[in-house]
Length: 251
Image (cartoon, rainbow, N blue to C red; front, top):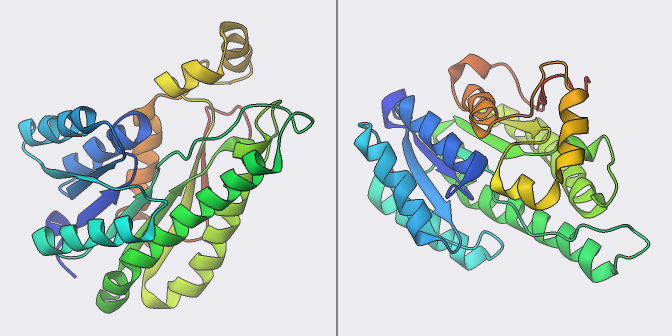
């Protein structure tokens, strides 16, 4: 395994929000960061430019993480440039419908479940050979508090992330003997452009009122929890979930 300064971290969906914040924090901690994105090349390149301006190393790689071939090509591109992926942060948000079960079709619910697990399966499979060969690896999945605490209209997201989180625990059990840890960071509501599409002002105000720390999470709050799992301080933790929600839900 390379030293800490040489570690390579792949962050999926890193062009904005939590992914971009995570890329920046990992770069600050001397990792070389792969900024994966799907469509917004300009945004991804801006994240890379910001990291480089601060003295870090980063590269942007386009890939749809739902497509096995695209993921394989991405990981091969990273291998050719920097070697294998030591840290996987799977953050990419797969689109989902916001509506009640009554109004939802199976294509909407089942499609989200399938795409969520297909992406996690593909990116994890692609990075495991290198992690296994070196006897060290970190895998961090982004979950959601909605997997445990339902909210109206969020059944597709909450159900699919609950599946992802249990998938992570099974992997933690299987991959522990290889020196690979698998953990989950589970944010509550986050102040971001995505949240603006889902939360109206009244809902946001109710959530802030229900949060002991008095505000919603910022992307950097979540990124710092991810960075903890990506490094040595969490070496004896696997199969765990970090709830980053300001105390809105305690478990």
